[in-house]
Length: 492
Image (spheres, rainbow, N blue to C red):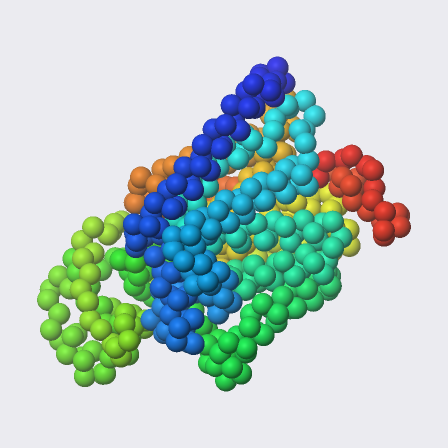
């Protein structure tokens, strides 16, 4: 890879063609999201968002059997402007439009403050990594999901922290945590970085956007009840339960590729049965015993704590004959849990130690964006539910690695780290396309593997960050706090 070859991609006509292709992707995402939402397709999340948020508005409570079991109460409030206060299909159109705007805001902020122009000698532009990310963008836009909101809020919040706006940056990160729980990982990040004002901003956001609206709408007792119910629903499908029952949510979440469930698929044997009898909710003990006694040789019994309707409990029979059966080992659930916990402790401990060692580095210093991207991807490590479209949150890491590789592109043949990073840049988008057509690849953790490769490449970029220069347009350690530095060094 030489500068002359890369110069081709910096030509205005070539770049315009890249932006045109990217525009086609976003337009098709808008059309696909609206079409699938109006068709009442049960697959996109809009099929759950619309009736569930309306139910909360009309009945003043969150149903225990809600498909949105992982969302805190504030997420239902955030959906009301699209599901309740605006007639359909205008609400759906507005929701899809906001999703696209969130993607555009994320791309702009990454270009303006993370990518920061073209690296020396490469002639690359942010349009190319964005274009390679089209599979994930297309999927998340057509699924009418909230992941793109989380991406935008996290990117903006982290950028505000880099721009020395800790209270506002922490508040935006707290707003993301009110929609989904995973951004709470930044509580540890801010504490390790001694960003106490940013931590205060997160707490303030949770109070103003979740606790206070819950008290106003549900009442003080109702707010406590709904948050207890949310915690119980989260425990129903925790990592530990996913390891114990890897096929628990196969029918509804067969494409779940979280670390805990993929590990269980590799290290635990699948049941030798073609059907599973599922008792949902809280059936009496005699019902459970009767169901267990009446099982056929090709059936297994599974207890699902989430009821499927307003009834106390329900019974269903799922076909699992098509579930992949291959596994490397036949460990028990406690052994797999121990492996899962040990590897997470090592990974999180290493990330926390690396962050703690840089705690005195000012925001926006060398390697800041790579560090922030590592914590963004850490959200995937702990969650028991990871769909393929969740990988849109890895866009900042992809941009950071692309930027780091571009700096060393003329010498990539002599650098093993650059070659490995180039491999991650190639494999990650390829995995997105393969996962769309291969259920087996998703089942055994293809997306998780590509994410691990990208995380390793991001860690390499973090380690190769310049040692002593501030980020662009950032206040240096020796300048007055109200003025901006004119140093034009590029952050990684």
